[in-house]
Length: 221
Image 1 (cartoon, rainbow, N blue to C red):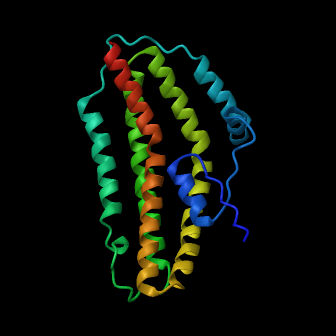
Image 2 (tube, helix red, strand yellow):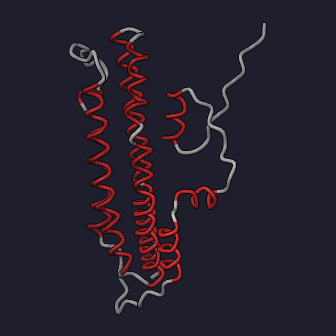
């Protein structure tokens, strides 16, 4: 008897792999390089701004700066707060009574609220980290300028793509609800929580990178 073909493994960030699995999609490797794909996201104004940031010669700070301990701790606390909100949300807890959950509306509200909280937190932290980089060294100041340009250029595209997550989760909700209220909704809650946790990790990548750059500068100072 012929065996069904195995679905190819989707490579990439956990968030992308989870979405591909939930949508039951085969995601092929991109046919173009990262610079080519990035070029499709940047219009000519953003490209000029990026070129200017890369070619800039920031002034040398009078006094070398180090990573403020409170800034590093602030990033850690902010992330832990967002993680705790996701892990302990009553609606996503396994075994939550299904009464009153006949539609997706409560889950959509939770998803949107968590996305807005992550977006606001990451934006604030990136600004704080860029300020610290600007005071660290000319090289770090250039990195801060590049990050500022990339945030302006890519954030609208990021928001547009991540805005599709609630719709995907709603389709999964409808699929699981048909499998039986208790078991189906518990499985959906686990999937939704996993997706939002992975999305949070994805959103924090710029914060992690900027913080790592600051720490590298401090260690080499």
